[in-house]
Length: 250
Image (cartoon, rainbow, N blue to C red):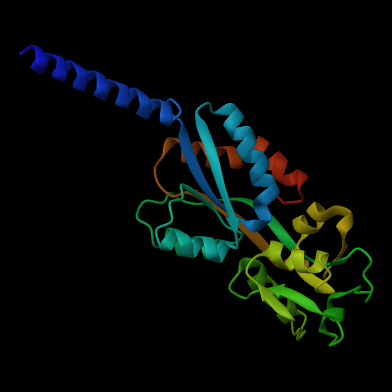
């Protein structure tokens, strides 16, 4: 009986220790919030996540950036995301339309297109029409990506036929091709040109003001932390961060 009692006590102690270890491993109730966001939101959402964590003890924001269409496909395939921020409403609709749990998305910012060239701009691109010159190596977002869809709309409005040397899956990839010297010019968002600073030269594109991308954000399930993050993004503080990066008001 003594052996049985001792074994029972040892088992209870072991289970208790395991329970304490599990709590410690979770950081004392630490909540990890996974946010999928369009590549053009990288700098702003990184700052917003840091501010959100500072104001919400016990919440860690895990960010995943990429082309909106790629992120939407990942979510559709079951990738664990709590919040999704897209660079256009069409891509967002593909996610929320296929979900029974997503809340209503809210537009929190707008963005417009701009031509980008390397800082030295050796070929001198000064207007949208210059991109149609066969001697200019142009890189664009792929048509299925929000920046690509907007670019095709802009070019169609201007009746321009541009043959890109490559089509990229995210706006940051387009920017990277230009800054690395692999392309003479590209079309990105105005915020990307601002964020790149002296590494690039921005050229206004005629008609860009008529092709505006509206950015929606949504909590993919009814979750307190996810809803709080969405509210933070759409708050006055969130919009101040976005405005400083060049985003327009919704």
